[in-house]
Length: 250
Image: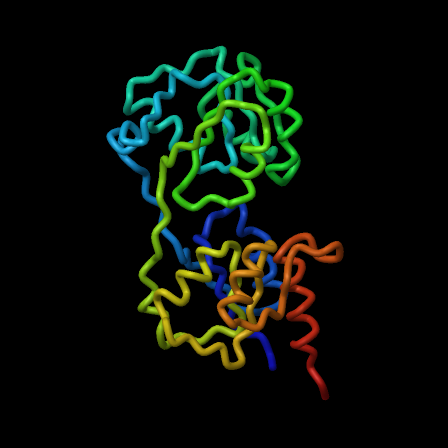
């Protein structure tokens, strides 16, 4: 089976999709980008219904760039001036650098994790007397509250944006050789749009343990599982897989 068409279940954006654009050119395959989910911000009244007052907290835990955007969006809507004394703990370096869109690093206290939420735990423990706010979507990995609940700290979660399934009906009669997924909710979106989805010869690629488990539980056969020691990125794994299947035999 030769790989000709790949669908990435995320929107096209110049930075994170650059490796796929390069892969498309080098391997002469068509790669389309289509978000399987949509993110919608909640209103200030929705925040008040959660009985959350931003001024009650001294540390904000950021787990994604979207959580950063919606925290500052709601702060402005609710006329809350974020104090210079506010501390920030960011799950990854990418999130921390993105935070510069809203604050000046040298004037704030920022702690940065490596990759997983577990990595920022030392900073949480260090500031255990503080009050922590966790901005998130309506979908949150269960291990995150489990980790925080095991600590002797005061923390609250506030839902600032919600995830909904995109309408993918226009893809009904379009065939792809590989479908690439990065989150469990994208798997759910696939079956919400196509309840009778039949994998047939379509290859499935998943990023992360939770995405793999969601695909497996949905009855899909997973052909590409990332990350691995050999392939830390999806683009690298796809390149190897395409190279293996697209060998021209004379």
